[in-house]
Image (cartoon, rainbow over all chains, first blue to last red; front, side, top):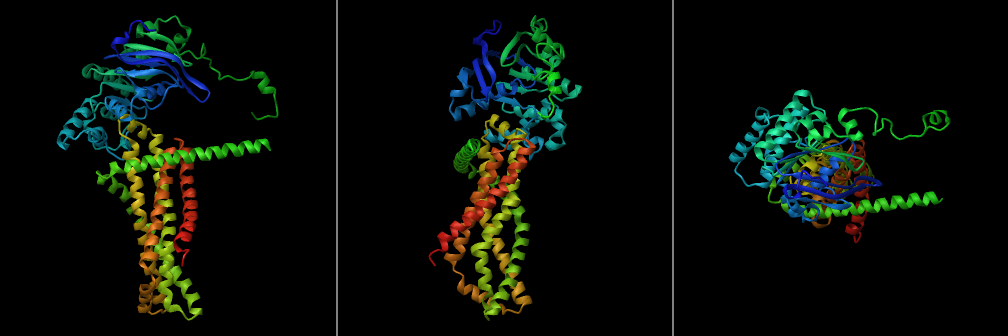
Amino acid sequence: MDKSVSPQNSLVSVRHLTFTRGDTKIFDDISMEFERGKITAIMGPSGTGKTTLLKLIGGQLFPNQGIINIDNKNVHQLRRADLYSLRKRMGMLFQSGALLTDMNVYDNVAFPLREHTHLPESMIRTLVLMKLQAVGLRGARNLMPNELSGGMARRVALARAIALDPMMIMYDEPFTGQDPISKGALVHLIKSLNNTLGLTSIMVSHDVQETTAIADYIYVISGGKIVGQGTPQEIKQSSSEWVQQFMTGTADGPVHFHYPAKDYVDDLLSSGKRY
Amino acid sequence: MIEFLQLLGKSTRASFTKLGRASFFLIQIVSGIASVLPRPRLLLKQMYSVGVLSFLIITISGLFVGMVLGLQGYYTLSDFGAEETLGVMVAASLVRELGPVVSALLFAGRAGSALTAEIGLMKATEQLSGMEMMAVDPIKRIISPRFLAGLLSMPLLAALFSAVGIIGGQLVGSGLLGVDEGAYWSQMQANIDFQDDIINGVLKSLVFGFVTSWIALFEGYDSIPTSEGVSRATTRTVVNSAFSILGLDFILTALMFGDD
């Protein structure tokens, strides 16, 4: 168990989580703590189920074993209405942005406010413009989602995620596929929103440089297990071969370059069969 | 042989599982309708896209079907010297049968496929998932309004189809072939029954609207969220809707007109 994060101060705790999809074990008895007011990152190669973990935390998927507590409530034992009221206090930034394509930027950000509050339009306008100003896109309010660049779409989605002033926010691969300027803008935004709004952030990412720059604590997962954890400094100095391969981006190591296959020479010489 | 049986068992089980999912989905949709009623704007927007945007295809098809009925009916009836009853024949065929059925088939092709593709793509681009995470139930916000819009639009479109078809039959019958215009309308008035013909026709189209919207929305919601998955789901919507419409039409006709 992790020593530096005390369970008392954690907003989200994952305990002995096991999750399987078909015959594949995505998570095998993992435990994590996400401290209030901090940015905690989950790192690992693509396909290790990082997005699945966020969906488990959000209550969209059910674990095979283990519990996930948010603010001392077991997410998977809540009634539907309670789960929905908990979700109003959680923001999630999807990798694609997940903006509603039939609405413009303004209406997308106003969407959760209109659905969940009975505020007058004038107040919604003020709130939407404040959120858009925070992500630097107040001037883009009339654009449609298909007119936005990937980075802009993610910033709009971020404005939408903070529209209801949540207590926590989950970022799914926020830096993937972004140009350096957008990456820089997102790094700055995630950090500053976390500090100014007092949010608890959970960030899933495989971008080493950006993540280590802003995370307070990092979990590295692979093959369903936690292979390393600690502050960015500790992770960088980790003695684990696996963590080192991931952090330095070496092509071959504990994670093999080749997908498991039968012997190369045998494979080439076995004629006749296509597969 | 064993392999064949295994395959048969597997596909039967898969179909029943799917039917179960679809039934559960229907229960969710219907219980979501209550939350649509206080927000008529959601419904109106969907009625525009499934109903109003199908207006042109329904009108033009109705006109041509009516004109063909006028021609065919005239040639058959005139053999018996009964061309005066052309109006009855055209109206009865349209109101009882062709109006509900053909407009439902067109509706499945025009609006049903669009619904499946829209929902499937919303799923593929994580919009539905995103809504769930914003504590907005996508069934209530997205699916139920579309279902209700389909259900209400279908009888209106079928009525439009029949009305335009009757005018088309008259254009050909009296305009081109010389059937007396007064006879065309008065025979129709005297012989088409409100309860037996018109109400039954409306009931048929309500059933078709229900089934087509259900299939279209379920296929979209249940689709595999990739471009291939959405394209297959769209095809299934049109094929399954067509089968259901034609099969149900036979059953409904037997039930409604069997006693005559």
